[in-house]
Length: 106
Image 1 (cartoon, one colour):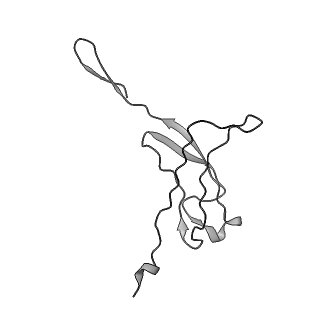
Image 2: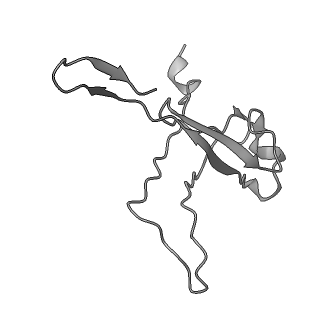
Image 3: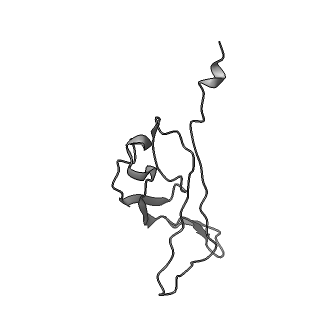
């Protein structure tokens, strides 16, 4: 029995990393985006961001339940979501002059 025909990838990834902000003609910032084409329409999909552990990022708008996406039930087979960086934790330490005592900064 050929099981390889039943298997499909479990995850689909796109990296979105812009080195600097981009603006359109009226001065509004252009949001970076990831586009996925030819995804399976009958599978249950989840949309989330894989960000550093010190970032708190959450979905602020989407007409769909991002944990339970069935593309065959999506109008136009296109899912859109806006995410926002809510908080970022900056960690570090310093070393004091003569005593070389360490001070935690978090």
